[in-house]
Image (cartoon, rainbow, N blue to C red; front, side, top):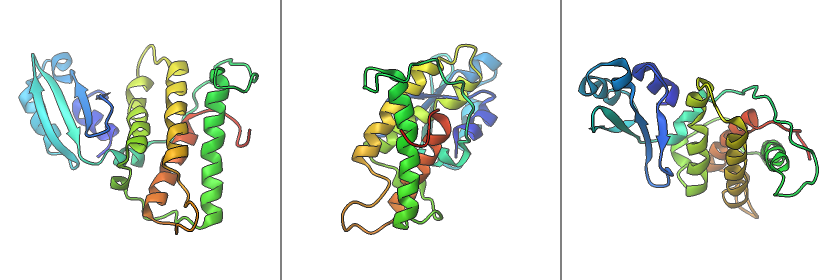
Length: 207
């Protein structure tokens, strides 16, 4: 179950909420905006595969919990977000342009290394992206459907947040085996995560 599928039922993209470290939560005011019964809409959402809980709150807000947030990668496609006019130098963490471009280059490197080390490209299992660093990247990626239809998507700040989340994941939850560790399904899942990040962040393949 992906955010795109949720949006098809809700009539608009849901908004990811919280950190997703322990549970992946979306919220939606679609029932209020569409002037439909929140309970009826909640019932439709609850029938989707991958939705583990739906709660109606307040005047009609839905709180939706999904069981496997990694499944959203099934529908993340490369985007053509205009690259902000950030300078190339200095190449330090204080320069948002460097942060974003280096994030793209790191994602590209992870894909190259994965091929060289024999990480299987098939057999993606979204449930393996369950560590805090993987889940934070997923949380930021989950904002894409809503930002794509927003009049003020705030791409500059978003790209920096995604890049910073991925830098942490790249270092602390690597997509390639470390030391004598054999390639496994978790690496396949993290390679798919790197592929999604590469398709969103602008930048060169090498930096």
